[in-house]
Amino acid sequence: MKAAIYYKIRDIRLKDIEKPEVRPGCVLIKIKAVGICRSDVHYFVHGRIGVQIIKKPLVLGHEAAGLVVEIGKGVKNIKLGDKVALEPGIFCGKCVQCKTGHPNLCKKVKFFGTPPVNGTFLEYVVHPAKMLFKLPKNISYEEGALIEPLTVGMYAVELAKIKASETVAILGAGPIGLSILKSVICRQVKKIYVTDYLDYRLKFAAKHKKVTVINAGNDPVAKILKMTKGRGVDVVFEAAGKAEAVKQTIEVAATGGRVVWAGIPDEDTVTIDCHEARRRELLIINVRRTKHQNEKAIRALASGKIKVKAMATHRFSLEEISKAFNIVEKYKDGVIKAIIEL
Ligand SMILES: [Zn+2]
Ligand SMILES: [Zn+2]
View 1 (cartoon, rainbow, N blue to C red):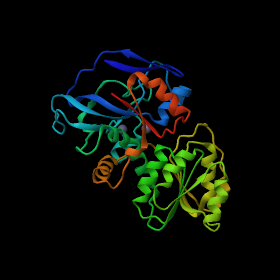
View 2: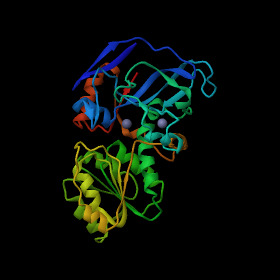
View 3: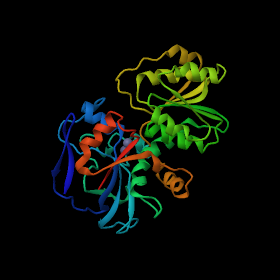
View 4: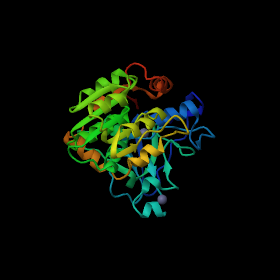
């Protein structure tokens, strides 16, 4: 089967590798759609994310949906021909984090496309049946691939404990920022400010109700403070993955407000004004991937409560993966989410 292999920085090539064999408790999935995540691009450009370093050739990709083509022994919850979204992290189920309800914090987690675990930019994968989520007929493979980023946004919003009539700022209007936005809108908030440097992304965000967009190059902090009469917002999300935006979260949060860091900053070190954060008792919340959101996300998509289709702006074959990474890396051609289709 074909697999897209990362060899070194900016070098991904297709290679024929052996098709995996199904194991007990697992199923064989023919991959149909995989989203390119900013974290994949991080690896593509830097060869690492923080201390997670790619040391040998690796298949990237973790936002996947596919068709079940073979069933392993003992599998009851999944049938041949099921359309599924894949939970990308196989957690151990035994450690303290897993046992206390935080599988996203499992230290032994095997997460697709995170070294040394191969990901899903390939034709077939074997995955535990209990880590699959059945997609109803009216959810496409492409939407299935968008579930993972959507659940990251939904989880960030859940952690923020947003109440109706609160004000919100989302710094960054990429797939995660927009997933946060779609989830925030369901919570009946009063007003949402969205910032980004890319006008085409702001235009996309502005199509949602209650949203005011501000270009990040246009003094967004002063603008948000002015529009909230100097108070700031109840909840601010960092979804840009930039040190600059992390700093801004402290500046635009209202006194006693919540700050949610959902992005992966390009920089290893970010300096914030800790006294400002302390004096105004800001609650700073970090988000590690996602947990317990898949079923909720599938229900929201199936019922039409949340729509993600329009976020998939670009489609490429596996053969075109380098081109796709290039477009995503450089924010070319109005890209929001690029999907590899197989
Ligand atoms: Zn992702
Ligand atoms: Zn664990």
